[in-house]
Image 1 (cartoon, rainbow, N blue to C red):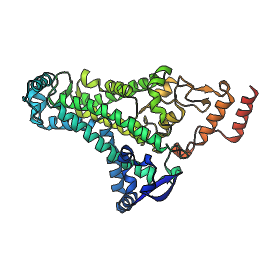
Image 2: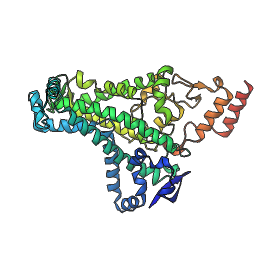
Image 3: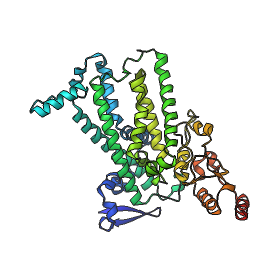
Image 4: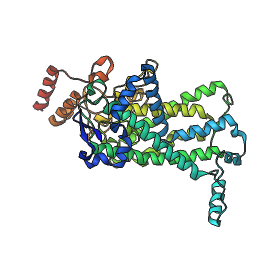
Length: 420
């Protein structure tokens, strides 16, 4: 059996028996299954027309976005309720999808009664579906993205990678997948519970299903309201988790991945990711929210979450003037305490946390505003200047690194630093 092995950005073919044990880890193999079939996939991929490849690529990212927090099952449940009109039925109508009444044994009957009281009939089935489906989609679509860039194009990173000179080590990749998988397990359980609760017409939800139930103005207006609420609150949550104590004990885990990949999007401390997700879910418990409008915003957010963490040079479309390019968040991972926003970069501009050319940023410089060249040591300055050289200028607009410093200017900066 022949297997692709990637070393220092180049491809070589070795027998499977020669692979180090770390490549045979079952969890890693779940994602890297495509490496065994890279040549076959590549041949098939090249036979497809360009427009088919674009559609498939977009669909794979959509699938992964629906899986990373288990939203695929919630979307499925709301589609059933939407087309079958169960929103107006009583809570027992939810059992038409999954009937799980089991009265064998007093203990089981009591559990069933408790679940019925909580509008959670059939909960075990929803949890199993949410977890199983999410992991299958995660490994399947994530494996494809891994192949498309990190296997098929690894020998030419300047064409697509934000930090073309650096890749995560296999050990860190495995760590990323393990942490991301564990956090996804938690979020899939949360999504499974909410889906079950919705199917059983839980009374705390403020979701509605008729398009014009609150008027068409509100149907479209809520998209903007939810988007602005979620993005601004997550900007501040993200920034708060960069405070020294919270960063050290929670968010630092996410910054283990200085060259992020698509799997980094869920590789977050469970406490933090649960905190963020509960904040994002607040609208469906507080204001009239059409299910489709809410999950449209969620899907948009998660798609860009995957892209922003992919490490791939992707520019936003002309109709997204608010959306930063992927290099914006890649800078956040490379320089740590800067560029806290996700889908609207203006939050950083307004609050002074947008990266500046004349500032130095590092993991030890908190606050989001960096330090001037005069405020840092020569060692910190040289480290920052070296980091700038590893950025891909093609990942910036017009293929120009707006933070690059010319040699003549660099000499003057270093000279001043030595004179301090």
